[in-house]
Amino acid sequence: MEGGGLVEPARNHKARQVSRVGYVRKMIEKKKCRRRIRKVQVPKVPIRLQELFLSCKEVFKGPATVPLPQDVQRLCGILDNMRAEDFGLGENLQFFKPNNTNKGTPRVTQTTVYECTNFSLCIFFLPTNGVIPLHNHPGMTVFSKLLLGSMHIKSYDWIPQQLINKDDSSRPSQLGLARLKANNVFAAPCETSVLYPTTGGNIHEFTAITPCAVLDVLGPPYSKQDGRDCSYYKDHPYASYSNGEITKQDGESYGWLEEIEMPEIAKMVGIEYLGPQIIENW
Image (cartoon, rainbow, N blue to C red; front, top):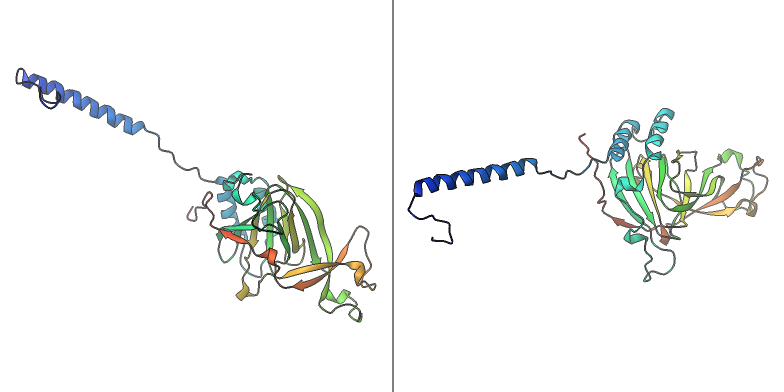
């Protein structure tokens, strides 16, 4: 036998050949059958993320528009059911771990899931004690969903200028009066918060108590060329410059906001989004 048994002797060669060919044919058929039934792992479509994307396309109509109440309720209903797993996130993310080389307030990391002219989906990762300082959202409606962790949120809305005593020379002219909207600790999972161009806590600050991930749906997104640049503020106690500007209602608090240059802690680390992908042509 030559070639290690791959060629048969001449005796009964024809019969042997038929037998061998038949054997090979059966083996090929078996292999083909195995190939047919082999299961292919197809990535699951992120249904909730896809639903959010499609709804945002319908809800956000562009600059100078605010979603209708029923549309706000629709998006909140989707976001309230979303979890960190919808974005492939867990509590052991690298940027949640403290970096001993950086002193002071830890840096916040940001990634953009999707962005177009009418809206954007962004996730912010705050390590423990990480801060997104007090900032505004000019002409924007923003849905915020805490996906992981617990954080302190402080937010304000401007008081109309006509209600403020402008004759008080003891108060710096760059200060603006604002009503305190929120000053609480939130922990995931929790309901979605919504802010509007002039209400709902349009000027807010995030401080992480534990490592946090928060999803922001912004409509429309920031755009400096379209007059939607981000401004930063420092808040001062109301009593520091109060001169009877307004009659305080029960349970309401106020503060003076001073616009400042972009703080160092506001500079974020941008990373590419590598989680479940949105399908644009659904």
